[in-house]
Each structure stands twice: as C-alpha cells, then as structure tokens.
Amino acid sequence: MTEQRPLAAVLGTELELRLFNYRDTTPLRSGQVDDEPYGGGAGMVLRVDVVAAALEAVYGGAPEHRVIALTPQGRPLTQAVVEELAAEPELTLLSSRFEGFDERIVTQLCSDAISIGPYVLSGGELPAMVLLDAIVRRLPGALAEGSGERESFSADLEGGLEYPHYTRPAEFRGWQVPDVLLSGDHGRVEEWRRAQSRERSTKQ
Ligand SMILES: C[S@@+](CC[C@H](N)C(=O)[O-])C[C@H]1O[C@@H](n2cnc3c(N)ncnc32)[C@H](O)[C@@H]1O
Image 1 (cartoon, rainbow, N blue to C red):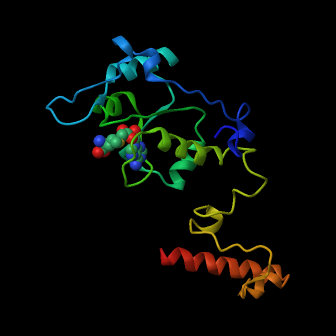
Image 2 (image 1 turned 90 degrees about the vertical axis):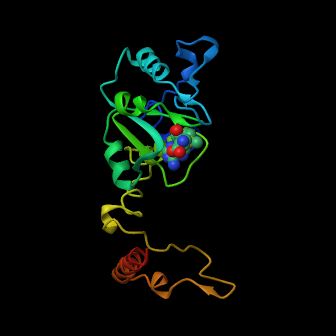
Image 3 (image 1 turned 30 degrees about the horizontal axis):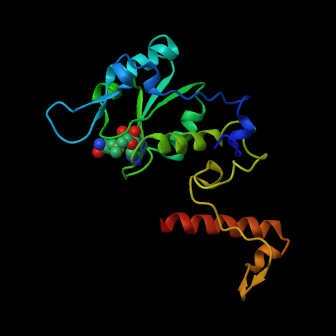
C-alpha cells in the first residue's frame, strides 16, 4: 500500500506513518494480548492493560491527539468524517481481532470509535487501511491538482455523487459516448454533468 499513489506521494512529507504491534509492548508473558470474556461466551477480547501499555510505550502516556478505535459499533465513516480527520495533525488508529475491544479501551483510552460500514470483518487492519487511504487522499500533494476537489460527496457537487465519465473510443460495439461530451461546448458539458450528478444523487 505504501508504494502506491496517493500514499507514496505524501509519505515522508505530509504523512508520517508508524505501525505498532500490541505484542511488542504487552506487559503479559509470551506476547499475550487478549483474554476470555467475563461472563463467558465465545472468543477472546483485547485487554485494556495491553492497549494502555502500547500507548504508554509509544507516547509516554495518553496521547494528546485523537485515538480512534476501529469497530463495527462506531460512528459510520462518511466523507464528512474523513474531512474532519484529515484536518487533524496526528491520529492513532486502534485495531482489534476476535471478539473486539475490552469496552474500557473504547470508553477510557479512545476519543472516537469509527465503523467503516454495517458489516463485520475479521480484524481492524483493513478498516484502518480504508480510513488511512481516505484521509491520505485529502492531504496536500496526494492527488494531482484539483482532482480531489470535484468528486462524489465533495462540496463542489453539493455532497452528491459524481457524474459519469467516458474516454476513447467514442463508440464501442454501438455504445456511444453522449454527444454533449464531444461537442466542445464547455457550458453545455458543465450543465449536463451537474444534471447527471443531481439525478444520480436523488436516486440513492
Ligand atoms: C470480528 S470483529 C468484532 C466484532 C464485534 N464482536 C461485534 O459484534 O461488533 C473484530 C475486529 O475487527 C474490526 N472490525 C470488524 N468490522 C469492522 C467494521 N465494520 N468497522 C471497523 N472495524 C471493524 C474491529 O477492530 C473489531 O474489533
């Protein structure tokens, strides 16, 4: 992931990325990081003392910046949330596995809990990468000039969906590119695009 644009474009300049494994700083023996749930039931739960030790080792205590737990029970990730987080100077993302976090991690050690969607994945690694990718695209220099300004959910399209795109050939198997896009009339093209964007957005 770090070799691919747009992440590669900002890594080392706008973005400093550090990865940590709870096992490297756990105070428990044999790299233990989770335990059986109180009250019984299946699965293992990530321990609060393990996460506290990781934050202590990395930041010397509770970080002053936002600490985000990735969990299906969190606030749904939207472009508005991405914009909000992209404006933060520093973030810590916490992932879990199996049954998830001891609740005290979320309530006491985190400032936010975010879900990438109403479904359950096996672990927080992919959600963390999804959030990272969405944030990175909003950092200065990540994208070619202007290309991030007008896209789905942007203010430029009033939070709606982007209009359809076409490229060469103008006709393929009888499937035609709309005439207006070949007209060279920028005013009509802009009008058509806005109308398409509105239509797609209201269908949602
Ligand atoms: C199997 S899930 C735990 C699900 C949890 N027992 C529940 O029912 O809500 C294990 C971990 O994957 C991550 N995860 C799974 N789905 C996610 C989602 N939709 N959004 C964010 N993180 C998710 C979280 O870190 C979670 O703690």
